[in-house]
Image (tube, rainbow, N blue to C red):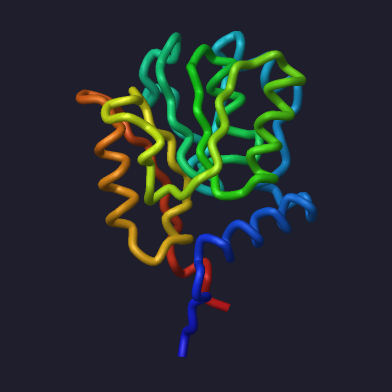
Length: 173
């Protein structure tokens, strides 16, 4: 029988905070050279573990209001901010958000960080974002429907949602 923790959000928070302490690849902030390239418009970020998002999938990032949804770790948010976007990172892990703040301070980037649940975006008004960047985080919730409802609510009409998914076969031991 596959038992789930009673409080999945708390379990994920503790797990991701621990992964920061272990320097897991998804918790290591980007370096200054990555930010310098992004400032020149040369950037590459991933939604899935292996393949970068094609550049043509992004809207014009200058002044674009971006929500990095469940996307802390000092990677995607700082790169998008350096490329000209107005970035808000929402994540469940305080330590992952600290990674974003650390890069923002080091590189003098403006990034808003919000600790929260990706299934409850009530802290944001309707139609707040032009782009939602949402890596492979749906595997950490028991029901994706509230995540999609909230994403739909906070995304502006005509906005873009970029979301990554992992094939469940990667979890077979």
